Image (tube, rainbow, N blue to C red; front, side):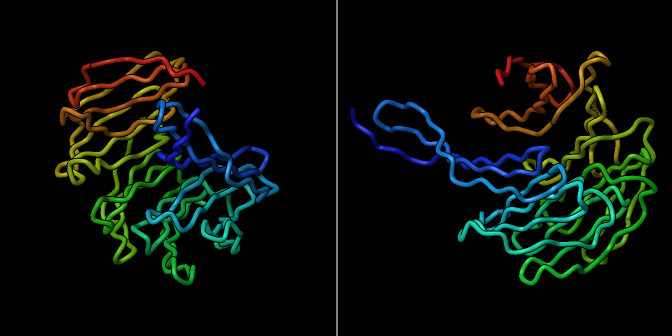
Length: 258
């Protein structure tokens, strides 16, 4: 049998027990078969890992846990290079801004901006009255959106470290996502069982995707298919993945076997 293996995807996952794992997905170009090759495994925290993020250049992997620490790994050496400890609550979300900055959100109601080259905390953004659930960076890298358990959405100027806009929501938002495909002209806000699509120029909701209140939305993202059509992809906790047009019309549905 001929083997001509090529790495097509690098994957990372974390566990509630505080362990971190990484795999390379390989394809055999001879017959198109796929395989997973485990590259690393770390036990990095006594607390549950809540979020992970990899820098765009693939150099650093960071994970946030319930023990209030951000753990940093150098993916070239496959070694831990330390922890960030400014937060006083569980780390809930992490996002890199290019390869220069790291943004973190926490149950302590704050957002921290870290400089990557020396891991110094440059700003602590306060404003949320309850835990920060998620953050998303605008494609320009100059603006971020955050959502929290206080049912608010906030826009932050990452240059000045100040809140530029606050919006009250009716329900508790769980996730936020800028549209990087259209340059940030839209953003998604995810709630328990629904997704709202907003225009960023006037913050108007242009569509709402809603399912049974017993089916939770796990994640929502913007996507462009091979034909150039832009879609909203929603993964539900009942293992169904659905694609929608921007107006909220369902285009296709798939069953995800996990």
